[in-house]
Amino acid sequence: MTESLQRPDPEISIVIPLLNEEESLSELRKEIDNALKDFRSYEIIFVDDGSKDDSWEVIADMSRNDERVRGISFRNNYGKSVALQAGFEKCKGHYVVTMDADLQDDPNEVPEMIEMLDAGYDLVSGWKKVRHDPITKTIPSKFFNFVTRKAAGIELHDFNCGLKAYRAEVVSNIYLYGELHRYIPMLAKREGFDRIAEKVVQHHPRKFGKTKFGISRFMNGFLDLVTILFVQKYLQKPMHLFGTVGTILLLVGGGINIYLAYVKLILGEGIGDRPLLFLGILLMVLGVQIFSTGLIAELVNKNHVEKQKPRIRDYVN
Image 1 (cartoon, helix red, strand yellow):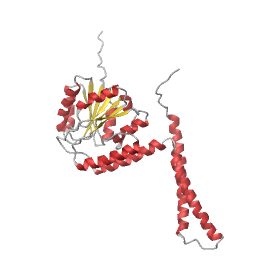
Image 2 (cartoon, one colour):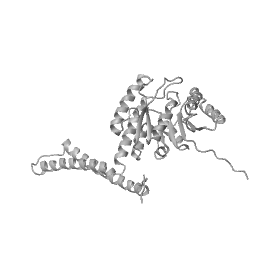
Image 3 (cartoon, helix red, strand yellow):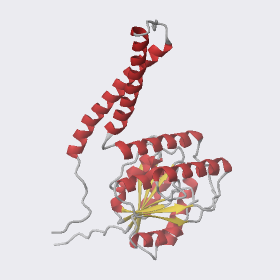
């Protein structure tokens, strides 16, 4: 009786999202092999985010010649976050590394990042201290990183760096959509993975193609930051926000209307044509609506919390 042999899971899964990078893929594949062939076992998962060039044909050809290379192809362009999430769901490695496909990230940085994870970190984020990008990309990025660093309370200099390394349990406990790939350290910290380190990495000039960065991605990134900060602070207690705002509006509006009632009933003056009357009514209506939104959010959250089980870090008896 012949017993089938099963290939052991690789130690490292490298997830590479891409869009129209056919010229870079073969060279990137060689650079990864040179960096990791004597280090640890690995797999590469290319996620083609709706490329219009021959990127998928290049990936398919590499996969036929090397079982360590795997690929996912989208029919349309869904964005980097969705591509990373698809790759995370297919990972088999104990550690997960993400990098861009444009050859600007250096695979030679990966071994040291993995060793930092071995030392106990949950996440290691690259820092492109010396960048080879146009000023239209570097200045907005510096401003974005400053705001994110202060808002998140995580001392990272480069949230945007595509070169990051994670323990597998980190990526299995977060979910990416929109532009949330920029905020993976924040998402990880929210889930209890707060051992976060940073490593200065080498950044190469782009050899092929052009950057996919645009002002719309910059604006969308900030909107997603607001979303994360709101969810992180008020997910379990929405009434603390909506109830506070609603109560303040009710008190201000009520105070205005009490004053106008005094003017009308005690002083005998007309108030029907006063803008202050409409302001008082408007504030009270808004206060009731926002307060009611908080109550509805609490009911929704109660149902969510009852279904959610906390992850236990350790247990002793």
